[in-house]
Amino acid sequence: MPEGDTVWQAARRLHEALAGEVLIRSDFRVPKYATVDLTGRRVLSTVPRGKHLLTRFEGGLTLHTHLRMEGAWKVYGAGERWRGGPGHQIRVILGTEHRTAVGYRLQVLELLRTTEEERVVGHLGPDLLGPDWDPERALANLRTDPARPLGEALLDQRNLAGIGNIYKSELCFLLGATPWLPVGALPADRAEKLPGLAHRLLEANRDRPVRQTTGLRHQDLFVYGRAPRPCLRCRTSVRVADQGDGSQERPTYWCPTCQTGPAPAPDAPQRWRERHRRSPS
Ligand SMILES: [Zn+2]
Image 1 (cartoon, rainbow, N blue to C red):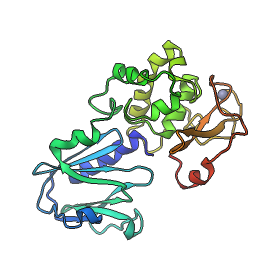
Image 2 (cartoon, protein in one colour; image 1 turned 45 degrees about the horizontal axis):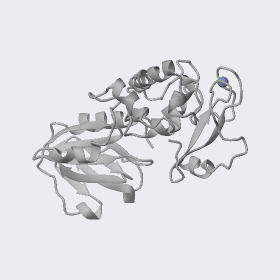
Image 3 (tube, helix red, strand yellow; image 1 turned 135 degrees about the vertical axis):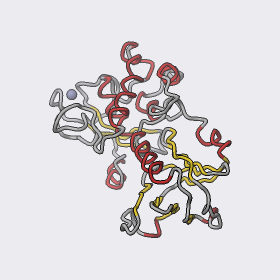
Image 4 (cartoon, helix red, strand yellow; image 1 turned 90 degrees about the horizontal axis):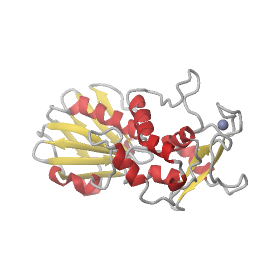
């Protein structure tokens, strides 16, 4: 699952490449839209909403895409070689006179009326990188289910939109709580810091090519992807275990010394290894 800052960067790339231009190429390679032709329409904008991308066209049409685990939007100039993957992974091509945007492996690709966008993004909580960001509402949403493990609550885009698996682990570390600590057990002073902390992390990384949460020169992340190496603060071995509801379990990293709260036993079954090789986020 991508982080909100990755989606924000993808939206900016698409916006800069296409907005204001008229499409001279439109090629939908999914059966449902095989006959759709958007050539001649001007592209108005691309905006991110949490991890969703909305590309709007003249005539009140919106293309809704979501990168999920493996999707990507690439932008190419004329004559540039396409490097996003083999041709059979292309789901859509949108070209203007100067730029071509290619959507690879997009698992969500849907055309809808612009007036109906709420249907696909209306469920999202306040967007960490959006104009609607509202820290009080995000915290209130997180607290609606006090028994829920902190890590799961942070990933639930209905609470606040933009946190993926990397920021989940890093935020729990910065809060000194394991991802399995019930939200309601987080001390009030730390809970109140949470939305602001999440917002600052995503804002700070919005324009960075490499994600950074530590402020340290040679270490980008505190715990994510670092098991079993020593914690940067206390030198305890960083641990990893699955967290999820059974259908979607994700590798979750934490320091058992710096973070207090429940955690799986060290010999708990680990299902993350096979998937981890494919996609870390
Ligand atoms: Zn530590």
